[in-house]
Image 1 (cartoon, rainbow, N blue to C red):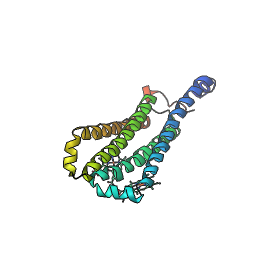
Image 2 (cartoon, protein in one colour; image 1 turned 120 degrees about the vertical axis):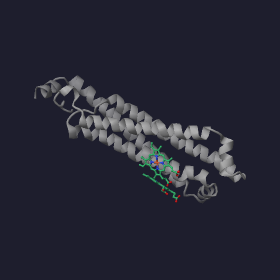
Image 3 (cartoon, rainbow, N blue to C red; image 1 turned 90 degrees about the vertical axis):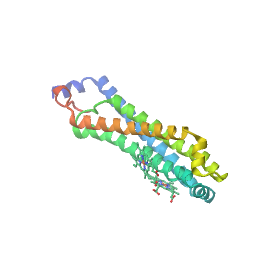
Length: 190
Ligand code: HEM
Ligand code: HEM
């Protein structure tokens, strides 16, 4: 009760805490809908007969654009980033203490954002380049050979960034749920 009273009589500190949390959650929400916007525009474009035929005709190269880029921008960028923001909002209310580390929250936000945008752009870019090579008569393996190591470098590096976005988020959630810092009683949540 004492610490609750102290918190209530220090509105500046309290306001700062609320602001920091709100900004973080807003960032997740805005990025989630931005990714959904990109993914749904791509979804509509890939239903157009000209694009649908191009994707089918280019085989494994087209597969990188639809469904791989499409699925990940919508599911990782849109759905899971919305869930991350929701967890960061709701978890402090459930466990009655703040999220373990705002720094980790912020880091996972940037890894997820840069990772999924990079993964999406790499898949679409490589899909278009290699797809055009296939249409000009190359096999997929010849196209891969022509593009060189940059194909794997782009996909693996952006996949790792996405992975870290998830893993940092997961650590932060587990620490929030299971850790009692310094044996202190749970701090009240604003
Ligand atoms: C305007 C909205 C959307 C349109 C027009 C659209 C359109 C499409 C099309 C044309 C395909 C390819 C189907 C095929 O190749 O057989 C597809 C696949 C897919 N879409 Fe969407 N999509 C939309 C939104 C979404 C959203 C919001 C999500 C996820 C939250 C999503 C997830 C997927 C997945 C996972 C696949 C791959 C399915 C598979 O494994 O074959 N899509 N979508
Ligand atoms: C670090 C995170 C992730 C990485 C690096 C990753 C990577 C991949 C890769 C390489 C494939 C390709 C399989 C192939 O066709 O050869 C794939 C397929 C797929 N992934 Fe992910 N993934 C991740 C997270 C997720 C998450 C969180 C979801 C859903 C919420 C998801 C949904 C899908 C779907 C629906 C497919 C199948 C698409 C299709 O072929 O129809 N992925 N993923």
